[in-house]
Length: 307
Image 1 (cartoon, rainbow, N blue to C red):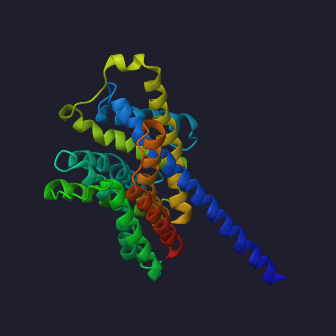
Image 2: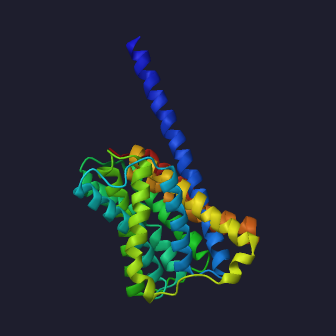
């Protein structure tokens, strides 16, 4: 009888894990599609910096409305941790990623940023000490990285090495990886809504000093197009507000390494969205790359002990 109870509990835990992985895949679908919405808004009067500030501010307001938590953490140390999360998962990551685009190609940045799961795994291994990887995990990493490479360069395979820009993009990866590790290790005592709200708050606050030095804002005419408003609401409400909540919940309950592996899927859904909205037919190489990513993510997710 006791054995049967244990078996049922294990099966329930496995089902919960599968449901959480499915939720993570849905987040990747949204984030992969969000590139299309952002591109549309930027082509119709919004600047990248202004768009980021606006969508983040709307998401933060929504969190203030729905959050029942206190304004501040339990102590100064935890409040400083929230500040670090806002920097690493918000302003620093955004600034590094966009700055790198000024010095290197978009293809290079896209490929390097998709190395975040690998960075997260390495950081987690040295910080947690008890994170374990089975041999097939590394096979999955190789499959996913090669698949992303095939998707990003899509048959061109002309890798232009730009040391400064590529290095900045690598630091962007490190920034988001630090965010994942900190969130997983130190935020157990706070609600997901509270942590996510603080991340958005400090992300916004820490960007203020950079406002005078960048082109920010939007063209007033941009508000005349209903599709712009729909895209903006999608980015703010769904992509930022809802998906960040779900993503932080998954990291907290499943572990940073296991969930970060799903980030490899983002370019796959971007390709699918480009086909659906812009009729950009993917090449055979892109399809093969997508299949390799799916296989790699499966191997990574099932061969990690993320404690």
